[in-house]
Amino acid sequence: MRTLLVWLLVPLALATIVGAALLYPFGVEQKTGAEVGLNQTPVEAVVTGLAENCGEKCVAITVKMTDGPSPGQSITIPSVKGPGAPSFELGDEVVLSYSGTQPQAAESYQIVDYQRGWSLAVLALLFAAAVLLLGRWQGLAALGALLLSFVVLVLFIMPSILAGENPLMVAVVGAGLIMFVVLYLTHGVSARTSTAVLGTMVSLALIGVLGALFSALSNLTGLDDDTANLVRLLGTDIDTRGLLLAGTLIGALGVLDDVTVTQTSAVWELRRANDELTWRELFAAGSRIGRDHMSSVVNTLVMAYAGAALPLLLAISLAGRSMGEILTAQQIAQEIVRTLVGSIGLVAAIPVTTALAALVAVRQEVTPIAAPEPEPSEPEPAPKTVKRAKPEPRPARIEGDLFTGYDPDKGPWVRPSRPAARRAAPANPAPPARRRSSGSP
Image 1 (cartoon, helix red, strand yellow):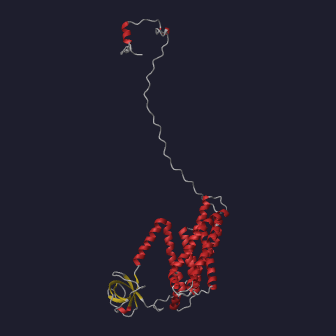
Image 2: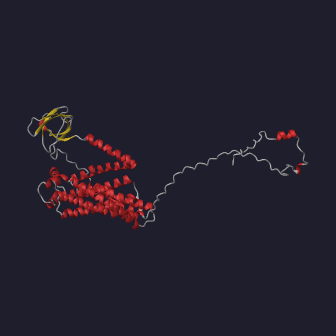
Image 3: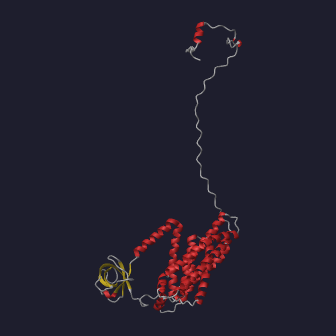
C-alpha cells in the first residue's frame, strides 16, 4: 500500500515542480507603480492639529511628516468631513500619498490611510503564541507551513499572473505546492498524510472542472471593479474568468485541508481502537463523522463568501431591484458560483477521503491503543497488634487425697509443724462472714 501511494504521489509532485518552473516568469521584469501610472509614494505622518475653518463639510488637518522627501515638515491638508469620511484625532499616525512634484507644497500630499503596523504585529504575536502554546512543536510546524504558503502566494502566484500566464493553471500549480508543503510539513511524511493529499487533489480537480463549466454556462466574465482597474493599469490582456477560478481554488484549499486531514485522522483512530473492523465498517463509521463535519464546514464557506460580499449586497439592495435580479447580477452571481462549487468540492472530499483512508488503513498494521495502567493502590495498613498481659501461671495440679493433700509418690506423709503452717497461711485473712439482721427477709 505504501508503494502504491508513492507511485501515485511522486508523479503528481514532479508535475507540480515542473509546472512551477515553466510558469514562473524568469527574466520578466515586473512593472513598477510609476510605469503603470501609479506615481503616488506613501509617506508616514502624525496628526498635530485640527481646524474646522475650510468649509461646511471640510476640516483642515495639520500633520508632521516623519519620512519621505521632507521629514519633520508640517503641512495642512483639507479633508472631507461627513458620513463615510474618516475622522481624525490628535496623535493619529496616518499615511500620506505624495505625488512626487513639489515636496514643500501641501497640494502634493493627500491623507489616504492610517498606520497599522504595530497593531497588526501585536495581533500576529498573540496568534503565534496561542498556536505554540497549544500545538507546541506541531504548532511551530504549522506556523512554518503558513509562512511558506504566503511565500508561494507572493513569490509565485502573483508574479506569474501579472506576467500574463493563465491564472487557472497558475492557481492549480500553486495550490499543489501549498498542499504538499503544508500537509507534509505539519503532519509528517506518512501514509495518513499521503491519503489526505490524494483526497485534497481529487477535490481540487473537481472544483476546477465544475468552476470552469458553470462559469461558462453562467457567462461570468470576472470583470468586477477591482479586476477592471487591474486590467486597465497593466495594459495587458488577462483571463479574468481564469482569475475568478483561481480565487475559487485558493479560497477552498484551506478548508479542504481541514476536511481531508480530519477524515483520515478519524479513520486511523477508529482502526487503532478496533483493529478487527473491515473496510466497509471503517468507511461507514468515518462517513458518520464526516456528515457532522460537513454541515459546519459548508456553513463556514458560505458565511466567509457572504461576509466578503456584504457591502456589495447592501449597495445592490438599495437600488430597488428584486431578489432575482440581485442574485443574478455579475458581482453576486460569481460569488454564488464560488460558494456552491467550493461547497460541492468539500462535500465530495468527505466520502472520497474516507474511502481512500479506509482502503489504506485496513491494510496497514497499526499499534492498538494500550490499555491504561492501573493506578498504584496504597498498601493496606497492617493490623495493629495489641499487646496483652501474659496470664499468670496456674498452680500445678494437685493429685492425691483432697482432704489431706497427700501424694503417695512423694513419700510418707509427715504432719507439718505449727510455725511452718503459720508461715504458709495467707498474709491477709478472709473477712468475717456478714451477719444478717433479724428484720431481713
